[in-house]
Length: 497
Image (cartoon, rainbow, N blue to C red):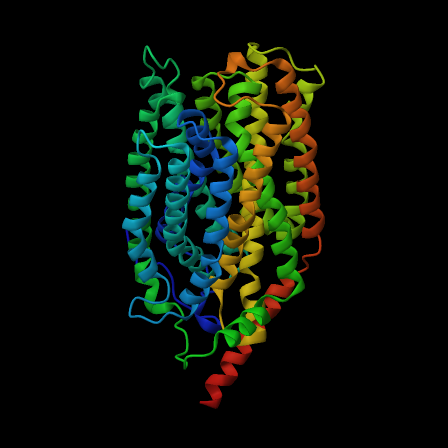
């Protein structure tokens, strides 16, 4: 899978970033690496609450608390690993040692998360969930943060960055969604028994899920590491420096990050992570209870995400080229976020037909496919906007810090997204949603309250995010000026030598 650098002539920008297009094999290998994170993310977002509260029987508040604690503990590791990988020196470069070493512990701990012991008390199971959640998130950080930073490092081209990150998001969404579709289309149906008529509530279903997911995560990490290994000699190496006090390191990181464009992206991402945690935690709750969709219908809905991934991944590079990253992100984001709760609003208003109507399912299917595609496009654009801050920071610090900037997004997602889970469980509590209930047991009044609390909270969070994002100002011309200045400095340094 590795192509080395034979597909390009490596023209090094300051610090080692290539200002050129990346070959297709590198794009595929780098993109495929996000399958590991996509599988993990889908599991935590869509199955974890359902599995541990409705199948294992832990109170949903305890599940939310365990996930929140794990996220907050793990969030500390992101900037540390990011800075560590920026300054790590080895014959395999700054990033790849982390990629290789994380493959086995990340996949093994994820498998164990879905095989909790039987016969344990609720308190014991809470601690089991908490410990395993911390372990898997820590091990995946050792992979994901250096891997994401590698994408920032492979190219500094304004448009190519969006293209490369599009591959990353495409495989991340497709990889995680493939397992989800498999679960609803095959496993849950196969695991239905006389005692448990719905395979979603059979714990053996999740053993199969954990095993398949762990294998896929391992393959994804190893293939991506090997597939990008040939670029190591042409990437930047940090300057060897003496050990410094921790406070000096903090001051250096502060100098890198204390800037308006970064703060706009950072704060906007805080709100976005809360909204993501809220929507993903309640996604299958709404499908199962609010819409009364069958496992087969939910499988088809999740299958539609493949179309969403294609839509978002194709649209982002085009939008970057035609409109620029921020204008495209603002317009696409507003359309996506205002349209997301539309089916629920129409149901609350009594406009959509009752459950069982084929029109309701296909209306939800089409709107979800388009909306998720626009959200994926928005995510690609904002990630590419973050990557462009690497060169701006280098002008201030004379150091490349891809790991620090890449870790800021995962730091936010882990630190704050747990609050989205807590918000979701709060919505369930306010709606007086029963624990362990089958779809037929939930009263219509409860479902109405569920939608009534969910929609305004979600819209308020998303619109606040878009307002904050509007303060980001770096555009195509600014980025090119940064690249030109870095090239000028590099040329001057070469002459001085």
